[in-house]
Amino acid sequence: MKTFLTLIIVCLFVDCFGNYCYWNTGCPYKYLSSDTPYNLVRGDIRDSVVKLKDCEPVSIWGIYKHGKRYPDEHTGKAMVDAISFRKDILSSYDKGRSSLCAQDMENLRNWQFDDKIFGDKRDVTDEGRNEMMFLGKRLREAFPDILNGINKSTSTFRSSKGMWLENSIKEFVRGLGNKNVVIDPPKTDYDYIAPYLNCEKTFESNPEVFVEINKYLNTSDYLVVKDRIHRRTGMDYVLTDDNVTALYNLCRYTWSGIDGKASPWCALFTKDDLQVLEYEGDLRTYYENGYGSRFNEIFGGMPLADLWSNFYRARNGGDKKMVGYVTHGRSLEQIYTALGLFKDVIPLSAGKRDPDRNWRSSVMSAFGGNFVAVLNKCTISNVEDHNIVFYMNEEPIRSICEDGVCSWQEFEYKLKPFVNTNFDFCQFI
Ligand SMILES: *[C@@H]1O[C@H](CO)[C@@H](O)[C@H](O)[C@H]1NC(C)=O
Ligand SMILES: *[C@@H]1O[C@H](CO)[C@@H](O)[C@H](O)[C@H]1NC(C)=O
Ligand SMILES: *[C@@H]1O[C@H](CO)[C@@H](O)[C@H](O)[C@H]1NC(C)=O
Image (cartoon, rainbow, N blue to C red; front, top):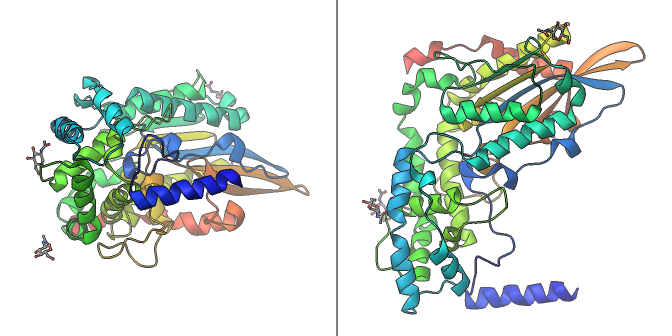
């Protein structure tokens, strides 16, 4: 009780005097849109696996976003330019024009430039490798019978094309710790794990995608962030939207999810600022990869058709016990859209940021984020039956069927229609 009171008093104090320090906030705001480290949002399949009486898991199908990657060339370059703001920020602090905290400024001063991050390596980072490897290892511990028994004919592993994707699946499979499996090479043409890549004009020719984002950058919700950065840092330079994005990327990409260390660059932002920037990311993904554009549910249906046919065959004695794909975050968001998950009654818009919205890219497409389905075979009074449990980031998805367990009939009703998905629409847009 006493600590609780102290906490209230501290909070009041912080509120009244605006004396917010990042280094000791205790719980820094960790939802960083699609660049969130997996460890900040994941569950643990070893604890959360749904064990059903008289049932045993017989097949696992999963699709995983690649682990944390290095920023692409354009993003990396803007971040390197933005590092030059550090000089202004520190000198403004030294002149007493800043309301940032001493320790935060010391941490920023001591922050080391690491040119590995900014060199457009098109690869996963060491942290990203760890994310994928330990994810594989936890799965092995949760489903030892399946994962110790598989070999190259009873499993399929493949990623989309790109070094960061190919290295992610290597690490994932390494974590599974089974030497008898192989990783197929990425497909060079159409692949249902990232079907939108074969219909690129859907996005290029879809200006709708940018309408809400551009509006949002002109709302008071967003403008307040810029204003607050100016006031708190005392910087003279008038920040552009690109500059804010670059500083935010410095905060996100130099945040370590492995040892849980936030970056000193994040000290430039208050929790409110980070929530606004998160929403900017959510608006973008909602219109690019989600309910904001009508093509996404079609694309999301394509990998789900593969899930359906794998489990259909497995149920009828087929031999695939484990299927794992590594792909882009966009595919995962399209899958959730096709399933009608995380849908908001009121579409996301520039005009209203709902703090309780369902669409959350921080969770849906964090680095290493994943959607996994497990087929169980049950024998109840000598009658054989199958059911399916869905997991997202190692937690059961309870909203999909009652208690998170779908009967075979429910699974069929939800997934079978995707088998008829095709690309015909692509040529008409
Ligand atoms: C700020 O953004 C503008 C473009 O919006 C860019 O030209 C400029 O280089 C950026 N400044 C820094 C220091 O990154
Ligand atoms: C893979 O395992 C299955 C059953 O577990 C077995 O029947 C098959 O012969 C194995 N195949 C290879 C290539 O080892
Ligand atoms: C931003 O808002 C201002 C004032 O409300 C308006 O004059 C301006 O045209 C808007 N700009 C854009 C790009 O919407």
